[in-house]
Length: 400
Image (tube, rainbow, N blue to C red; front, side, top):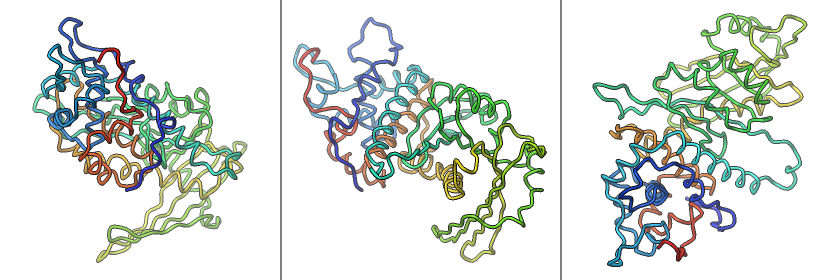
């Protein structure tokens, strides 16, 4: 576990972002501000909390000084009491999920931008390095009930340093394509590369992405696009030399990948896909211990021209899209037990997922390579969570 420098000037303060989330409660009888409740939840999740009870338990372990920094008001008898599990559950179940996701997404986008600027080497800082963003969906398995289906979320996640820039609840996996545009519309995607699987290879969405958002794309083409898939498979791949290879071994299997690209000439008819400039074939060989070797060819297209990218970069982007499962979804399921969570009331399942995205993004931008180990180190001392969210340990005098 290794974290970068916790310089207060380099880590944005989370509080102004949370202040933009509207409070769903009546003004009458409020004791805790919404920002204070959400900060308790954010600090708890950064410390490894998995359930609403554990969110409240973090507040119970926090010192009076720490609660003052967070914004917990002092009673006339001079005590400060953290929100109860019931109150936290009610607030998370009623909070505006879109507003919370927008606030956390904006915060993580600023963190990601700052982290990227710090890590770019001086020798390469003048070269254009495009952001690569994956669009992918995830089901919240534990949120299902006899009378309601499981919740399904669609997210826009950066490659490399994993940060969730946007998230939306879509109801069911089959609804992902209709939420593609609303998810990406608020984001600045100029000159970025967006990757997605075959489900999102919808021509209208891709035309919008290129023409309106000025972005590039890499789209995997499967048999759900029969015309484009047939055209790609029919290209003279045997006559094209392998342009990049990569191999590796993990989890008892060996895998090698090779990539070929082929220019798509509009004057020769192109293919049945908008703004496609390069055709891509990725050939994978996988050997699991004790099993026969399997081979698979995957086809894709991109709006990038040959002079705008390289086979190595294309291979990294395609591989990076598949890697979102390990770098985000796997952490949410294993470290934060998301699939085992039975939270199901109102917007609480989505809010909990948003808090997990916040914790993963905040820790990743600071250089954490093992989220589970990092959260365990933070859990033992509640004061460690605040600097990770850009909050100093000096409480403000007003309102305390």
